[in-house]
Each structure stands twice: as structure tokens, then as C-alpha cells.
Image 1 (tube, one colour):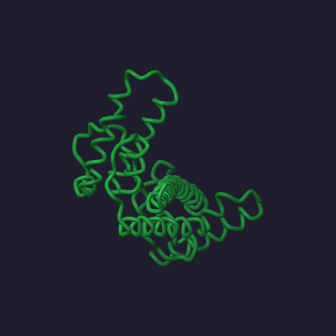
Image 2 (cartoon, helix red, strand yellow):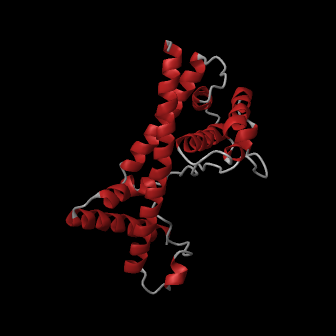
Image 3 (cartoon, one colour):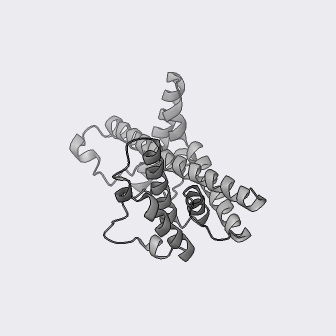
Length: 220
């Protein structure tokens, strides 16, 4: 394995793992934020009927940045892995994907699209190909040339020459995801969710409630 291919393999593996991690981290953070928000409303606004609490626009869910330093930040939409190639319409991301990425995906789909796997016996080969197809779908959605090339190479599909610029772009994606993970994991909501110490959990929750109530008073 030459140096460039080695770097491609390493960065593709790292980016793929981080993309999976950030999806789960966003889901956990959003769920924890909703739980804290629900407890806050039950404590400070018990007069609001339960069925209407989720619709109460006066008290916004505490966001990532509010949980840590009392200022709002925007959440990125969750990335979702499409389940089939036969989608009604291509997303704008797919339409704008690099031609080489699209080309590799078509070759990958010819080998491991779910329709191609129906006659395979259940087992490692079928599971592996299904996994690679889902990985390729996500790479197409995100225009991740290195991940697509890595999938292609595992299936024996010819890949284009990978450039230093493409390696740099992938490194930047990795840095960006790491920053978002660091930000999520530094929030009070995250620490509240993962701490096992009841006293620490209560202390963090009370701090969150104080900050949330202060924000509510400022808005009203």
C-alpha cells in the first residue's frame, strides 16, 4: 500500500466513524434536552396541561450552547442514511455530488444494491455488502470522495486517483465534526445525562433550571 492510499484508507475510516458518532451524539443531546425541558415545565409551569407542554412556544428547548454558556447556537440537521437506491427524487446534495463520486456509486450499486443481494444466502457476505451499500449511500449524500473510494476498493471497483486536495478536504471535515462533538460533550445537558452521581446530577439540573428560568424571564 503506497502512502497516498494509506492516508486515504485512514482518513476514510476516521471520517466514517466520526459521522456515525456525531449522529448518535446529536440524538442523545436532543433527547436529553427534551427531558430537561419537560422537567423544567413540570416544576415551574405545572398549570400548563401535559398535552400542551410540547407546544408551548414561550419556553424554547435549551440548546447546546445555552446549556453550557447561556447563548444560543444552531443545530445541524441530522444526517440520515437512505435505505434504498430507488428514492423518488435525488437530494440536492446528491445532484451536486462530484461526478467521480456519482460514477463510483453507480459501480458500487451494481455490485451490492439490495436488489442484487436478494438471492444471496444470509451470512457475512450479504451483511457486509449491505453495510457497504449503506456506507456508499451516505458518502454520496455527503459527497465524501474518500469514503466512496474506500468502499469501491473493498468491492474491487476501480477508483480514480485521489488528490492531495481531496485528502485536505476530508481532514477539514474531520476537524469540523470533532469540534461539534467537543461542543456537545462540554454542555451541561450532556454532563447531566451521563453522570451517575445523584448529587452531581441534581446540582447540574438545578443550574440548568436557573439559567432556563432566567432566559424565560428575559423573553417575557
